Image (cartoon, rainbow over all chains, first blue to last red; front, side):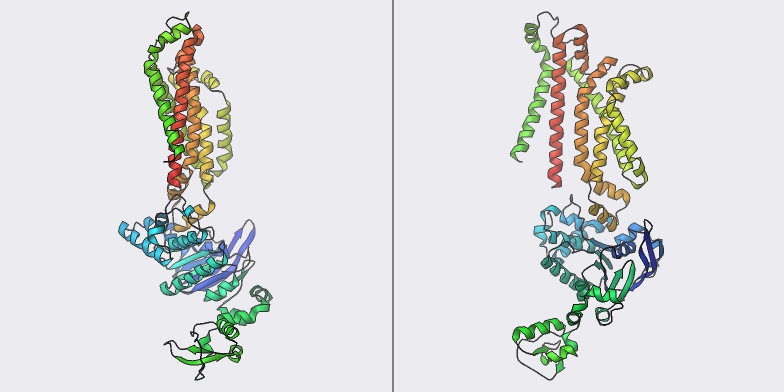
Length: 307
Length: 247
């Protein structure tokens, strides 16, 4: 649990972060969203004490971070930045081993962990372990950046627009892999982005920031169904709110049991966008849905999307 | 090893060999100089042997360079820390002044205080060689990408660990380039130490100038020139090796 309580940060006479209060439950994926200068990165950097709050309190697991040694605190928190910041004079393996080395893990344990992480981030250990950062593509560098952040198995991962500089395809792939990693390892992730769609797709907790303040926080569904004000409505894109609602709702919640039709079934976790897309592709208004065991026991129709 | 690297290595070995030959076989060149300069007797400078003079020259350049390097590292690192940032401009100005005062002037000022011989020469060389090194220490440390430093800090490196594991290794090639410039310049400059009684390769040169014996000047100058070229080629090899390792 990460708690921010009335956190303020002034910079050069300007209030960059203004009385931000936030509770991020353990294992949650929290997206800090907003345009440039909204104070999201500043908020993030106060969590691992790269910046000190002007006022307010930040607690992790109940402990005030200002009472912890900054180095100890940071070694227990994964940190990924947009410009990656791999150490150019170290190999991929050395880069990933950074924090385990700082924590003085035994050598064989570090080597095993490096191999495990390279596998997790889909980089073949034999090929990539001994390469230098400049030999990798942008996407591969950021995979190593994520692996480095995960190396000492921290409970918390802070990510500052980690995939912002990557092409859309690479970014999409990394985002969905991050989603999987988060679900498997139950990390608490705080993710800074200006991409509201990404936030709605992956986050449990969406925090929309505007001019240093939190404009709204809630689940993606709450934010879409009840935008707090005109800024939030404009930011999430008022023209497309309906379509975005389809992307955060699941087929499983709209299925009509008993009405079975033929065709390839959708999983209950599929989004309503996928269902709508399949209806358009198959030129039908009803798509079969399977239950978690795999049996087709119902379907979802066009009118079910609108309920 | 690439062809170019090979060539650099061959040039280094060749120059060093030529230098050694010249040092040890100088007396054998006596007939050559006697033929060219029949009026000069003896044709080869003889008050000290060339290997001895060379060793003294090497020692004084090495010692003053080590002092310059130590001071430049210490001060260069200091002014790139948050605590020392405000002294950065001052240090730059001081180093520039040090570079702009001719070493001869330093000798003139230092002799009344330090006496004749080794020490005024050491001081003049250390001051003169300081600027190229400290400028590159600062430039090298400041060339470390902001993202790399931020990542290191975010991972939980202590400030000292950032300096030791990130900043200095990444700045090393740039620092080495400064050391190379400084050392090569001072190999030449050290000769003026002989005007205040230090034994250097300038000793035969000064003696030749004073006694109107041109062969002594040629002998001393050719050894200094070969020494400077060999040192330059040597640093080039070290620098190349560093770059290969970093890439």
